[in-house]
Length: 610
Image (cartoon, rainbow, N blue to C red):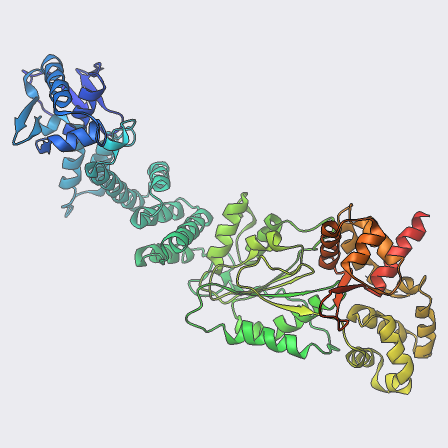
């Protein structure tokens, strides 16, 4: 830059904290009010700034006076004469003040001059443009007038400079990609994008830079975070440019995922479409109404154009009620409606080794085509990448045996083209918008049908009374009935009555309800371990009452509790599925019953301790 040598080399800097340099040396600034007047006048160099506006910005609303303003302005003029000589002066014009200072002495003006000159780029070498804009960008030392009071910082001229800063970075990002030097701009662009969370053009360049730097997972995560912010806070979808950048990442060679289809194997090859749903069972029986509800919801509403989010359905019920079997059966019937894949995870619910969402997301990402080394190490980044990969694709996610809402939330898809099916002993009341079906126990007829499906119709009908008693001793629990069926199928010479005789012995019943790796006791033990320590003595006392109905008052009396605590304990036991609400015909009072298999389990614990 060529400057007249007869004047001092002054540099007034506002692209960062206010600073004035003389011959390369920073000079002391005037006192607070003259200093802030200088800041405002530099923002509007060669423009008239009204006295009322100066009072509002520098002193604050309702503070200051014309005398204070003129005193401070007089001190500013004296300081300018001392430090800048004749190159700068402040004029009083038409009820306001104007700073006269050549643009070459103001960093913001020099920056804007380069930006304006860059608008006509025809025939200019991109390397030269990159060098010129980088030189202009180096003048930025931080936010405009950083540290100034809010009255100054809220000036519209600062917002305009911030926008020019972002525009400069956007141009530089495009240039850096074109000359194959994206790393040069990535740190600055990322930092500015964090301070401008809704600047879609800037975030578009950041996505492109990350992809050009060989960081497609981070690029997809950046898109997902932007999409979520826009949807949650503004209620809008990303712009067409943002979506084009996103699709550009998906179309990289070798591609991570297809543009509108499944993930592909790196280096080419056949598409990877995950089909992780376990096999359906051949003798599935019953549950006609829950099946109809789930198929209608997850299948019939899939094409609803007004649906803003993913469909989420839940199946809840006691341990052994058949939640997993039903989920697998429904998922297999829905598979054709989700051609881009089906993901499955056993979350191991309330077991001691319950799955962490972090680990499940890692497996899902690898199933969707992300290389092991490209899977992010941060949970939030895994969630963002996972939802980006699912965006716009028809994928069904089955989350089996969930502990509760907190475990499944990070695993739920965000795209309205996807669906999730959850099974849990928890009632899933905290999963927003979920359609939940509750599985009860089978009645005698339905339970006998299940038994017949396992052991054969002829064998079941040959001993109808024994078959009915057997399923009653199983309390209509599908898992218990299936275990009995498996034992009978393995011993075709046994009459059903033989197993019934074994089950009548309450002390041995849970021992008999076990075959191979299936055991009713295992589910009861997991539920019992979940119950709070202070509630377990209440459960033990209720078990000793036998198969009876009881009200809150009974619990309070038997266990020595007040009514509030008794209500709390019953709520915990009901959530653990040890206690059920029963209809006794007395509408004025709620009655409960301890389920028989749960009662026998608790009595067995007491017997073992003694």
